Image 1 (spheres, rainbow, N blue to C red):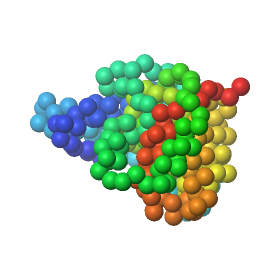
Image 2: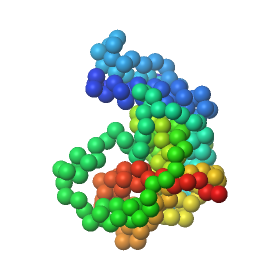
Image 3: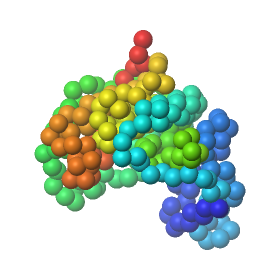
Image 4: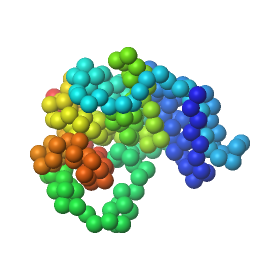
Length: 240
């Protein structure tokens, strides 16, 4: 069993995770089984108790096309769940919606890398209105793998309702940073007709021309996270 305990101020994120786990399980998305939870009423602190799934979240050093297509299929299943906002699953217009990136940026100087990335993103205005279940922090490290299959999608405390382009964008950005643009394209093999936001990948690739993906992530981790935050606000219509 896995027990996650927080402070009373964290109670809303625990309620989000509980609601998201229940909804994802109903949609046959592989998630840990919810065994119990408390919003802080009974035990003075919020907690979530889930089963411990087999597998590892370690990201392979080399890209595996079949694995990347499976990630796309998992995202497709996730985004096939239409969802209206609720107090537990509110509107999310960007990945990691609970993180105050604006405050983080006020505390340090803006880098040229971040400014360049934001300029690339602003070239295309946001469009589209499809609203579905959104994980809110979908990347390879939030999936568990056992014997070549996804045993679970974890860390649902940023979940809510949003555009599919948000999760797909952050997932493809992560893959592009790790393996390059061609690998990111593999994620879409199971996403025909999905609403996507390719600009996160375009930004990652454009910037990676100056630094290899893993070196870029190590050298500018905050800038990369902020790029995902900004680009997650943009949506594009489904492909015809």
